[in-house]
Length: 127
Image (cartoon, rainbow, N blue to C red):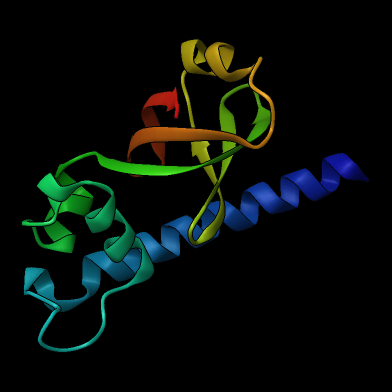
């Protein structure tokens, strides 16, 4: 039963991530959102996470540059997926074998800072 809940949670997180990415990529065509509609949660978090990325528009930074975020490590969901609790909820990210091995000994709830592109973590460290 617990395994089933984890799979459902991971799938829900993946769908949410894709939906947010599609929303960010289709809002405003790269125009500045400050004058009109409010920015999405993911673009405001990524802008606050790294001042260097704040000067780029959300659609440019989401597709061209890796994003930097912080969160709480929840654990490995399988051999190539980890779950991190972020400001938008629990999100599943893909990792390579080396990263999976690195985080396999970390306790759930560990504060982390990570860099990702699309849904793949490229760098992760304890805070």
